Image 1 (cartoon, rainbow, N blue to C red):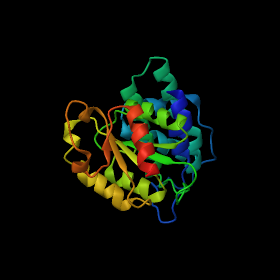
Image 2: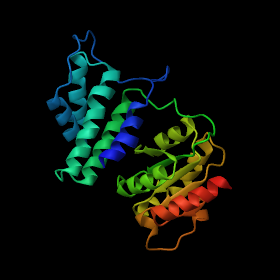
Image 3: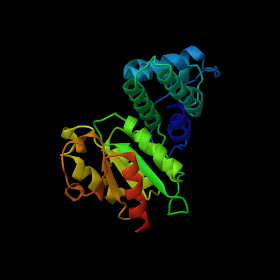
Length: 252
């Protein structure tokens, strides 16, 4: 878990720039001189994110900003170490995976609320194949995606684990940088109805014309469904199959 955080999730949270037109959350006027973020602040922030307590999380960040913490330092000195803290707690069996995932989603929301987004990824196809892996909106069960990401990474792919919780944020992700492939995990049947619209939106927004979309996840394990009915290229039932299909699709 810590390896995945270090290789994929934390760099994604930190690989951000503030667009000129973005509107950041208001900061208090006349901030005091910057104070370092304490270990207690990091642990409190991680705990609040894992609990899904947005109100308390935002209050903590506002306090730190009032004390002089700049937006860039929120990312480097608060969000990144808090993400590592969540990974350590999962490895120590003091926090379950669902709470870790919820915490990462909360951190991602904060990054966007501060007016940041990823904009410096590749803008065209390159020598290294790139895949974006994400859960369909409405699900935060990312363990399967972490496993799939390791198969792709070890096969030489560059992997982006996108923890965006909404359709609009996923569409912005594929519009901002080039991906050779998009993989979506669908956890529950209720997500299937919105899947064609999601895939259509992703392909319309994608910087890569006609980007192929692979589907997987628990919703497909107990029934025979056609990928074409959702606008996707294939439905895969495990990580090994996903990698083989992905290689074939991108080569073709």
